[in-house]
Structures are given as C-alpha cells and as structure tokens.
Image (cartoon, rainbow, N blue to C red; front, side, top):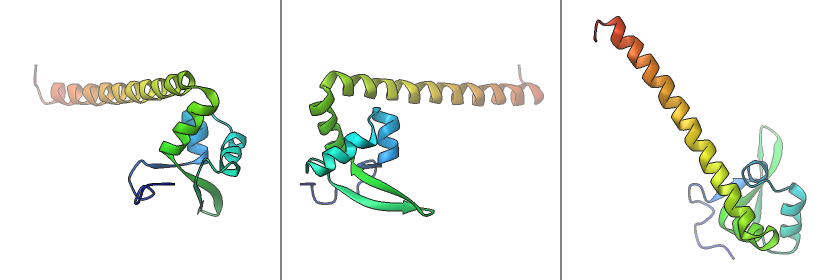
Length: 108
C-alpha cells in the first residue's frame, strides 16, 4: 500500500497521539481504520510507552473519507495558524531581547 521509503521520509509518519491532537480524531477511529485495512501502522515504544506509528498521507485520506474534506481542511488550517502564531510570539520575544541588548550597548 505505502510507497517505497515512505516510512523513512521525514514528516511522513506520526503517532496516534499526535494524530489525535493535530486532526482531532479519536484512537477508536484510528483503530477502526486499521481493522478495515485502510491504514498501515507500525508498533513503537518510547520509554516503555507503546504507540502506533501511522502514515500521514493515509490518515489524511481516511479522515477525509470518514469525516469529510471540510473537516480535514478546517483542522489543517487551524494547525497551521497555531504554528504561525507560535512563531510570531517567538520572534517577538527574540526582537525584544535584541532591542534590550542594543539599548544596553548604547545604540539608539
């Protein structure tokens, strides 16, 4: 089902916990997709805690089929907006610290 090397590509996989937070789907929906043969998965464990590793492309296709394309689009936009806001906040903090350093060095 999966393309050759897709499991190794950066950003192509995600855990079931990340899928729940990014796409707002429950673990039950993920397990249902696995049992139906629509989602491939691999078992993983970090510090003794088990998780399911899923392919992002398959999960997005499954979510759009089950919950609709609008749901998936809305969630992806919300996730992107969250990351943009976080980056803006980080840049504002960095700018503030640089301005303080500039003032301490006698600039402007």
